[in-house]
Image (cartoon, rainbow, N blue to C red; front, top):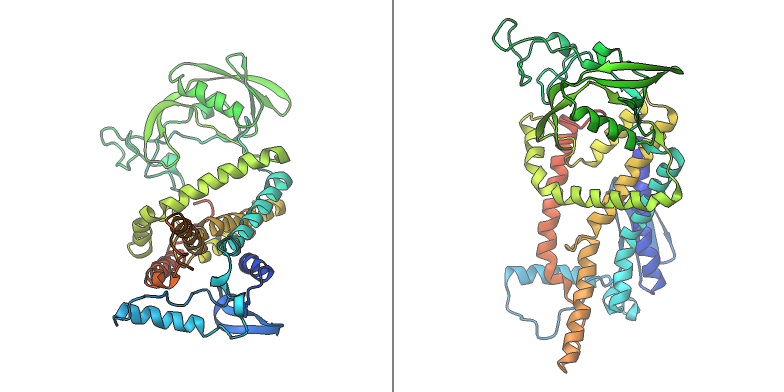
Length: 446
C-alpha cells in the first residue's frame, strides 16, 4: 500500500509538472506547486514558486495567477446572492495579481497557450499510462488462453449455482437450476460428475486435436476452437488427443448439456455442450508492434467504464450500506486500489514478476483514468478550462465575421456555481467509494 501511495503521488506530481512546465514556458507566473491537499507537510521556495507536499495525497494543484479574468464591461451591477458569490471568487483570484505581472496572467495569454497548459497535465498521465502498459506488455506479458488444461472440476454446476462458492460444492444437493435443496426432494440431486473427470482428462494435459482434427496451438485461437467444438457436441462423443508429459493419448469425452454464461457481465445464460475443463493462462510477451492495438483496446474499455459510473452508483450505495455483494466491475476508490495492491504482494501463489506486473498495471490503469477523467469538459476539471478557451476562440471568430469587436476572455467565474456543484458531487462519490472500499471491498480474485 505504501508503494501504491508513492506511485500515486508521483503520478499526481507528474501531472502537475505538465501544467507547470508549459505555464512557465509561456511566461505565466506560478506561485505554488503542491502535491496533495490539506495542511502543508513540507514546502520550499525556489525563485517565485513555492514547492510542497500536503497531508492528503489525493490530488494536487499549481496556482497560476489570473486564472479568472476581471468582470466584463457592461456586466450587471444589480446585487444578487449569486453575483455576490461570483464577485467574491473573482476578487480572491485577482488578489494574486501584482501590478508587475503585466501579461504574465493566465487570462491574457492566447487561447491556444491556455489549451496547451491545461491539456499538458492529463497528457502527462497518458504518457505514464503508455509507458507502464508498454513495460507490462513487452517486458512481462499478459495472460492469454492456451490449450493446456489448468483445472478439471469434479462436477457440473449450472451458471449461477448457489453452491458455486461453497467449500465442497459437489457434495451439496441442488436443483437443475442450481438452487440448494433437501436430498430426496423431487428434482433434487447431487451435481453429476464432469465429463472431463469421467474421461480421465487431467490438469497439465495439452489438447492437440479433436476427433482427429488438429487444434491450433496459438494462444486464444486454439481454445476458441475447443470451445466451439464442445458447445455444439452435447451428447455426442468427442475424441480428445492430448499431450501428457510427452505421451500422446486419445480420450473419449461426451459433453453434457449445461447452463453457462452467455456474456461477460454474467446476466444471460444459454444451454450448450459442457465438458468441465478450464484453460491455463500463461503470460505471453507482446511485440512492440502489437502495443498500439492493445492500448487502443484499453482506452476504449476505460472510456466505457467511465461512462458506466453513474449507472453503477446505486449498486455501490447498496454494497456500502445495505450489505449487497460488491460489483467487481463497478467503480473503486484509491483505498480499494491500494488494498488490492497490498493483496497482490501478499498473494503467495504469484511469482515476484507477476506481482510487479500487476502493480505496474494498477498504476497504468490509474493514470489512464486520470487522463480521461480530467479531460471531461466540466469546470473545474482541466477539460472545463480547455472547453472555455475553445469557446472563447469560437466566440471571437464569430464576432470578427459579424464585424464586431473581440469579446475578450471568457468569464469562467460565471461557472463557479457549477464548479462547486460538480466538486460536491465528486466529494460525495469519493466518500461513498471510501465507505464501500472499507466495509465491503473488492478483493483479489473476487
